[in-house]
Image (cartoon, rainbow, N blue to C red; front, side):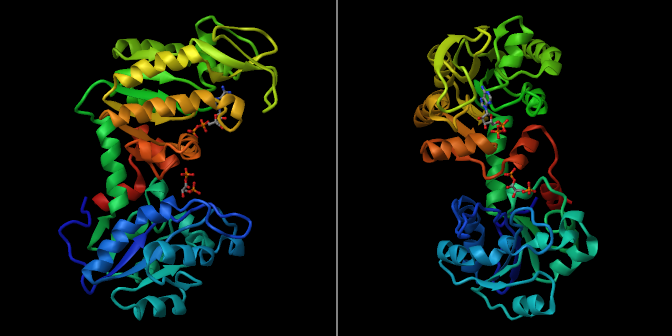
Length: 394
Ligand SMILES: Nc1ncnc2c1ncn2[C@@H]1O[C@H](COP(=O)(O)OP(=O)(O)O)[C@@H](O)[C@H]1O
Ligand SMILES: O=C(OP(=O)(O)O)[C@H](O)COP(=O)(O)O
């Protein structure tokens, strides 16, 4: 796969697929600029070489041309972050849109309207992709967060370019994940949490071959505990996954992976921020109580493993971190990962809610890398080939 290295974009027009699917508040202001900032290295490189940039992205999941999903809302924020006044055109493939990219000069940036205003985008329509391709001489895909979608602008479009390249962000995401999945140093520890085992099962199966320790926290804990005969009270459980949990434990043993489950749990008498709480052994939770966070003994046990790890992957919170009473476990594990990182461990945080937790608790700059993709990162962890990446390899 070609990258932006060893290529000079002087006098070239690069069409870059970015993932500017950013959260907006009720005043249409961007509340998290991470994805825009993450696209900056590719854009800067091309402009500094003396080229021009046409940016295309989706925003949200609009049904038709819903004004609230227009990329016009983010144009000023993109300009501010890139330090260049970005031009905006309110279409993707109209005469006006083509005229705008046609007259773009070196050093200038044009942002096209939301690609998903066209249903052809999600359908992976070939004509639409071919039309889009007219906006540039070179195609760059830097939309890691959308690389798991086989859409017109992420996958289909690549075949209309002789010169297609992975942007700096896409490259960085792949390289950082490679540091975990093909680690040269040991021990490698994966920390998995979140709500359900069912959404992480393929991830677990794929990474068991690549890790030494598997730490399990969050709601999925209780399916493992119950499967082994523990009492879990009213905690979250997937009854139809009990045998699967036992199979995972057997497979881990076969692969010499040490599985670490919580030993204690912060339990609540209801799923509520004002619930009564106490700590109970994770396998002796009374009826009427549900485990919503890991307890202090579990934190201490997990911290020992984290401290001794060379490579750490973290996906999924340890508890219901959105409620203060059940956030402690996630914070403490995040801090343990940050401390290990300070001592030279490589740590990668990926997946939707663990990224949200890391940001909420100010740990973002204290881990080695925070992925910009939720679903895309999970699919890579599952060992799947992502269409947006595969299209650059052909
Ligand atoms: N013990 C628990 N019981 C119920 N829900 C939990 C528990 N621990 C964590 N969760 C919830 O899991 C959710 C995240 O799950 P998931 O979507 O699988 O993770 P991710 O998005 O990181 O992959 C969070 O909203 C969190 O509140
Ligand atoms: O935000 C995104 O995905 P994510 O929430 O899984 O990280 C991407 O922009 C993909 O969006 P989509 O899931 O609507 O295709």
